Length: 579
Image (tube, rainbow, N blue to C red):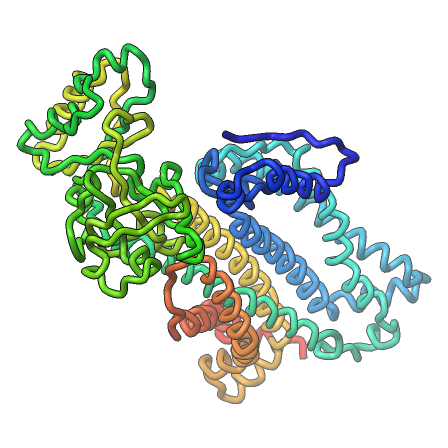
């Protein structure tokens, strides 16, 4: 049951929460109070922040939203820094313009307005282009995301706030620097390239390299973590197991056509029909299957076991055969007792599996449970979660609603086998639809959000790195342009092309190394925090941190060399002609 309460807008939510707790304490039985906890939760928080048992549907992940929002902010920030960097780098080109305007009577506030207006026009053009691109690529983005998104511009009103903010951030500093040039220095040719903002420009480049290195580290880590979860052995056999959903409605018609009219019968009609097919190796009826958690409920073991909670999976005795569970001691017999996993045996105080077989323990409701067998721990849920203590209990043969038939079927003539299983199902349950899937794909579906996040993270990380490279390309082009005559003189004096390329690339390589020293500790710490969200995760290897640095170095060399080689190959006569 899902209970929704509309609270008066003037009510105090914390007071309401306390009233519920007081009501339960006053009216509910003590055992109920020990096992039940009522909490008030805002409806809007359920999708991203609620991950309780028996959720209505699979919820989203707030961490993914935060990561992608952070990347979006970094992409915008890198673009703004590129604009500031390139604008201030062109100070010499515009210095004579500023000096001439000041000589003609222009005041500094007027020049600031001019440069802010230029920034406004560029941001306006980018904003309009962005809206067009969003509307164009949104269908592809929705397909990639796998979720419906309302793409009306009016629903993204907060984005319009970025327009004036980005205009001020990108335009204020260049306007302040350019409008401050002294007309005598600019018109007299005394303003040099290195005199204005070189340290700030280098700082901006270092910041972009830091962001690029951290994003590449995380991209590699996301891919590795996803591969780790999907390729690790979950402890049961995933291949060759077909799952058929049990009947969905318990009606008089359903009971009438059920071949097992005796509620004490030990054989299931559908299972009997399945085993007549030689291609069926084993079958089991259970309330839950690997990768599905809504039909697993928890029980408390009581004060004798520190009120520990264990999960209960209702199934028959063939469950272990179908999924290839490793039996450590005893038998997998749920008809005459209970089967537990290693975690449960540890909680009950049995260090060895053999010591638990035949023992009887009492749960929090004083119900006696006799242990018939102990199985090796396996991942009933994804690798996001720790392995839970598990108890396998007997299945009520007359209750099959919302249950699952797990069938180990031969891969030979698979389509024909599926057809035969469907025919047998319709004979037993003629008024229910035949729905099936394979446990390998069903279990892997738990990682769909991780796969989408990996694709989105990689795409937007690549976009951020690409924008950073554009800024680096523009800055290296302008550096090569400013040093054209120097390059010409060096070539006349006998400098080789390779030595000139090393000369012009050296400063950028140094900036990458500085960025690496700053970025790697941050990346390592952030990676540890992110991996802490997974119960089973990869180990941070040295190459995971070194490889992104090497990759950024190669990208930097390629980007810078494109312009430096071009400048180095130019005829020195052309560059020195005006001297």
